[in-house]
Image 1: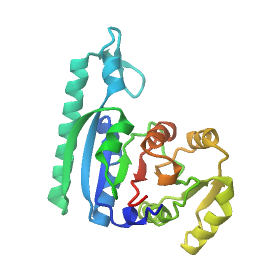
Image 2 (image 1 turned 60 degrees about the vertical axis):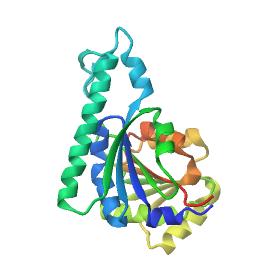
Image 3 (image 1 turned 30 degrees about the vertical axis):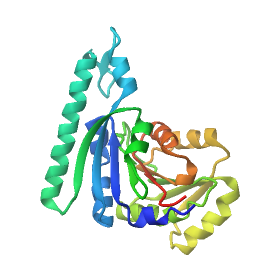
Length: 246
Protein backbone atom coordinates (compact mmCIF):
# COMPACT_ATOMS: atom_id res chain seq x y z
CA UNK A 1 0.00 0.00 0.00
CA UNK A 2 1.16 3.55 -0.70
CA UNK A 3 -0.55 6.49 0.97
CA UNK A 4 1.84 9.37 0.29
CA UNK A 5 -0.23 11.21 -2.40
CA UNK A 6 -3.08 11.59 0.07
CA UNK A 7 -0.76 13.37 2.49
CA UNK A 8 0.87 15.90 0.19
CA UNK A 9 -2.04 16.67 -2.14
CA UNK A 10 -5.37 15.66 -0.57
CA UNK A 11 -8.51 16.37 -2.57
CA UNK A 12 -10.40 17.36 0.55
CA UNK A 13 -10.03 17.78 4.28
CA UNK A 14 -13.18 16.23 5.75
CA UNK A 15 -13.85 17.72 9.20
CA UNK A 16 -16.30 15.51 11.08
CA UNK A 17 -17.88 16.23 14.46
CA UNK A 18 -21.05 15.57 16.43
CA UNK A 19 -21.31 19.12 17.82
CA UNK A 20 -20.03 22.59 16.98
CA UNK A 21 -17.74 22.71 20.03
CA UNK A 22 -15.84 19.67 18.73
CA UNK A 23 -15.71 21.05 15.19
CA UNK A 24 -14.54 24.44 16.45
CA UNK A 25 -11.71 22.81 18.44
CA UNK A 26 -10.25 21.41 15.19
CA UNK A 27 -11.25 24.27 12.87
CA UNK A 28 -7.90 26.07 12.98
CA UNK A 29 -6.10 22.85 12.14
CA UNK A 30 -8.57 22.08 9.33
CA UNK A 31 -8.15 25.55 7.81
CA UNK A 32 -4.37 25.27 8.04
CA UNK A 33 -4.35 21.90 6.29
CA UNK A 34 -6.65 23.18 3.54
CA UNK A 35 -4.54 26.29 3.01
CA UNK A 36 -1.27 24.34 3.02
CA UNK A 37 -2.40 21.74 0.50
CA UNK A 38 -4.97 23.64 -1.57
CA UNK A 39 -7.62 21.08 -0.61
CA UNK A 40 -11.34 21.70 -0.32
CA UNK A 41 -12.62 21.78 3.26
CA UNK A 42 -15.78 19.78 3.83
CA UNK A 43 -17.51 20.24 7.16
CA UNK A 44 -19.54 17.21 8.17
CA UNK A 45 -21.89 17.52 11.16
CA UNK A 46 -22.95 14.05 12.26
CA UNK A 47 -26.28 13.32 13.94
CA UNK A 48 -24.84 10.43 15.93
CA UNK A 49 -27.44 7.65 16.13
CA UNK A 50 -26.51 6.75 19.71
CA UNK A 51 -27.12 10.35 20.83
CA UNK A 52 -30.50 10.45 19.09
CA UNK A 53 -31.45 7.12 20.67
CA UNK A 54 -30.41 8.33 24.14
CA UNK A 55 -32.39 11.55 23.72
CA UNK A 56 -35.53 9.44 23.19
CA UNK A 57 -35.40 8.00 26.72
CA UNK A 58 -37.89 9.54 29.13
CA UNK A 59 -35.29 10.37 31.78
CA UNK A 60 -32.54 11.58 29.45
CA UNK A 61 -30.77 14.75 30.60
CA UNK A 62 -28.26 17.11 29.00
CA UNK A 63 -25.08 17.92 30.94
CA UNK A 64 -22.64 20.80 30.62
CA UNK A 65 -18.84 20.34 30.70
CA UNK A 66 -18.91 20.53 34.51
CA UNK A 67 -21.39 17.66 34.68
CA UNK A 68 -24.34 19.83 35.67
CA UNK A 69 -27.77 19.06 34.26
CA UNK A 70 -29.07 21.65 31.80
CA UNK A 71 -32.54 20.14 31.48
CA UNK A 72 -34.40 17.28 29.85
CA UNK A 73 -33.76 15.93 26.40
CA UNK A 74 -35.94 14.85 23.51
CA UNK A 75 -35.31 13.68 19.98
CA UNK A 76 -36.78 16.93 18.67
CA UNK A 77 -34.49 19.01 20.89
CA UNK A 78 -31.41 17.08 19.77
CA UNK A 79 -32.30 17.33 16.08
CA UNK A 80 -32.74 21.08 16.49
CA UNK A 81 -29.36 21.30 18.25
CA UNK A 82 -27.62 19.40 15.44
CA UNK A 83 -29.16 21.76 12.87
CA UNK A 84 -28.14 24.81 14.86
CA UNK A 85 -24.57 23.52 15.15
CA UNK A 86 -24.52 22.90 11.40
CA UNK A 87 -25.51 26.52 10.78
CA UNK A 88 -22.78 27.72 13.15
CA UNK A 89 -20.19 25.68 11.27
CA UNK A 90 -21.44 27.10 7.97
CA UNK A 91 -21.11 30.62 9.38
CA UNK A 92 -17.56 29.93 10.60
CA UNK A 93 -16.41 28.61 7.23
CA UNK A 94 -18.13 31.44 5.35
CA UNK A 95 -16.28 33.92 7.57
CA UNK A 96 -12.98 32.11 6.98
CA UNK A 97 -13.60 32.16 3.22
CA UNK A 98 -13.95 35.96 3.33
CA UNK A 99 -10.44 36.21 4.76
CA UNK A 100 -8.62 33.68 2.53
CA UNK A 101 -9.23 31.63 -0.62
CA UNK A 102 -11.18 28.57 0.50
CA UNK A 103 -13.35 26.01 -1.23
CA UNK A 104 -15.76 24.66 1.35
CA UNK A 105 -19.08 22.98 2.01
CA UNK A 106 -21.05 21.79 5.03
CA UNK A 107 -23.52 18.92 5.28
CA UNK A 108 -25.52 17.25 8.04
CA UNK A 109 -25.81 13.46 8.04
CA UNK A 110 -27.23 10.94 10.49
CA UNK A 111 -25.49 7.70 11.42
CA UNK A 112 -22.56 6.31 13.38
CA UNK A 113 -19.41 8.43 13.33
CA UNK A 114 -17.13 5.86 11.68
CA UNK A 115 -19.69 4.76 9.10
CA UNK A 116 -20.58 8.33 8.09
CA UNK A 117 -16.93 9.33 7.76
CA UNK A 118 -16.09 6.21 5.75
CA UNK A 119 -18.96 6.95 3.39
CA UNK A 120 -18.17 10.65 3.03
CA UNK A 121 -14.39 10.52 2.59
CA UNK A 122 -12.97 9.27 -0.68
CA UNK A 123 -9.61 8.15 -1.96
CA UNK A 124 -6.96 10.78 -1.31
CA UNK A 125 -8.91 12.69 1.36
CA UNK A 126 -7.77 13.57 4.86
CA UNK A 127 -10.28 12.84 7.63
CA UNK A 128 -10.11 15.16 10.62
CA UNK A 129 -12.29 14.18 13.58
CA UNK A 130 -12.96 17.16 15.85
CA UNK A 131 -12.90 16.88 19.62
CA UNK A 132 -12.95 19.57 22.29
CA UNK A 133 -10.52 18.56 25.06
CA UNK A 134 -11.78 19.00 28.60
CA UNK A 135 -8.26 19.36 29.97
CA UNK A 136 -5.09 21.19 28.83
CA UNK A 137 -3.19 19.50 26.01
CA UNK A 138 0.32 18.75 27.27
CA UNK A 139 1.34 15.79 25.11
CA UNK A 140 2.05 17.58 21.82
CA UNK A 141 1.40 15.80 18.53
CA UNK A 142 1.14 12.02 18.71
CA UNK A 143 1.69 9.94 15.56
CA UNK A 144 0.32 6.38 15.70
CA UNK A 145 1.82 3.88 13.25
CA UNK A 146 0.70 0.30 12.67
CA UNK A 147 2.25 -2.82 11.21
CA UNK A 148 1.95 -1.56 7.61
CA UNK A 149 4.21 0.95 5.89
CA UNK A 150 2.77 4.34 6.93
CA UNK A 151 6.15 6.06 6.54
CA UNK A 152 4.69 8.58 4.11
CA UNK A 153 2.64 10.12 6.91
CA UNK A 154 5.74 11.06 8.92
CA UNK A 155 6.34 14.10 6.72
CA UNK A 156 2.77 15.33 7.21
CA UNK A 157 2.97 14.84 10.98
CA UNK A 158 6.31 16.63 11.08
CA UNK A 159 4.94 19.63 9.17
CA UNK A 160 1.92 19.88 11.47
CA UNK A 161 4.13 19.64 14.55
CA UNK A 162 6.40 22.37 13.19
CA UNK A 163 3.56 24.66 12.16
CA UNK A 164 1.85 24.33 15.54
CA UNK A 165 5.12 24.31 17.52
CA UNK A 166 4.26 20.97 19.08
CA UNK A 167 6.61 18.28 20.30
CA UNK A 168 6.21 15.04 18.35
CA UNK A 169 5.75 11.62 19.93
CA UNK A 170 5.59 8.49 17.76
CA UNK A 171 3.94 5.25 18.90
CA UNK A 172 4.92 2.16 16.90
CA UNK A 173 4.75 -1.65 17.13
CA UNK A 174 7.96 -3.03 18.76
CA UNK A 175 9.31 -4.59 15.56
CA UNK A 176 9.29 -1.20 13.80
CA UNK A 177 10.88 0.96 16.49
CA UNK A 178 14.43 1.00 15.06
CA UNK A 179 13.20 1.43 11.47
CA UNK A 180 10.97 4.39 12.33
CA UNK A 181 13.65 6.02 14.49
CA UNK A 182 15.98 5.94 11.47
CA UNK A 183 13.25 7.32 9.18
CA UNK A 184 12.69 10.20 11.60
CA UNK A 185 16.43 10.88 11.72
CA UNK A 186 16.64 11.00 7.92
CA UNK A 187 13.65 13.37 7.85
CA UNK A 188 15.44 15.73 10.23
CA UNK A 189 12.96 15.13 13.04
CA UNK A 190 15.66 14.61 15.64
CA UNK A 191 13.55 15.70 18.61
CA UNK A 192 10.74 13.23 17.97
CA UNK A 193 10.36 10.62 20.71
CA UNK A 194 9.71 7.03 19.61
CA UNK A 195 7.90 4.59 21.89
CA UNK A 196 6.57 1.10 21.17
CA UNK A 197 3.23 -0.44 22.14
CA UNK A 198 2.62 -4.18 22.41
CA UNK A 199 -1.04 -4.32 21.37
CA UNK A 200 -4.23 -2.27 21.05
CA UNK A 201 -4.88 -2.35 24.80
CA UNK A 202 -1.40 -0.98 25.53
CA UNK A 203 -1.86 1.73 22.86
CA UNK A 204 -5.18 2.79 24.35
CA UNK A 205 -3.73 2.92 27.86
CA UNK A 206 -0.78 5.05 26.75
CA UNK A 207 -2.91 7.47 24.73
CA UNK A 208 -5.31 7.84 27.63
CA UNK A 209 -2.48 9.20 29.76
CA UNK A 210 -0.85 11.55 27.26
CA UNK A 211 -3.27 14.51 26.79
CA UNK A 212 -2.17 15.13 23.17
CA UNK A 213 -3.01 18.27 21.23
CA UNK A 214 -3.69 16.21 18.11
CA UNK A 215 -3.32 12.59 17.06
CA UNK A 216 -2.20 11.65 13.54
CA UNK A 217 -2.99 8.05 12.63
CA UNK A 218 -1.47 6.11 9.75
CA UNK A 219 -3.93 4.13 7.61
CA UNK A 220 -2.08 0.95 8.55
CA UNK A 221 -2.94 1.52 12.22
CA UNK A 222 -6.67 0.97 11.51
CA UNK A 223 -9.61 2.52 9.67
CA UNK A 224 -12.33 4.97 10.66
CA UNK A 225 -13.67 2.66 13.38
CA UNK A 226 -10.29 2.54 15.11
CA UNK A 227 -9.86 6.30 14.63
CA UNK A 228 -13.23 7.11 16.24
CA UNK A 229 -12.26 4.90 19.18
CA UNK A 230 -8.88 6.61 19.58
CA UNK A 231 -10.51 10.04 19.60
CA UNK A 232 -12.57 9.08 22.64
CA UNK A 233 -9.52 7.62 24.38
CA UNK A 234 -7.06 10.40 23.58
CA UNK A 235 -9.71 13.15 23.97
CA UNK A 236 -8.13 15.13 21.15
CA UNK A 237 -8.69 15.83 17.43
CA UNK A 238 -7.44 13.08 15.11
CA UNK A 239 -6.20 13.10 11.50
CA UNK A 240 -6.56 9.97 9.35
CA UNK A 241 -5.53 9.88 5.66
CA UNK A 242 -7.60 7.80 3.25
CA UNK A 243 -5.03 5.84 1.18
CA UNK A 244 -4.58 6.93 -2.40
CA UNK A 245 -3.97 3.34 -3.50
CA UNK A 246 -4.36 -0.15 -2.10
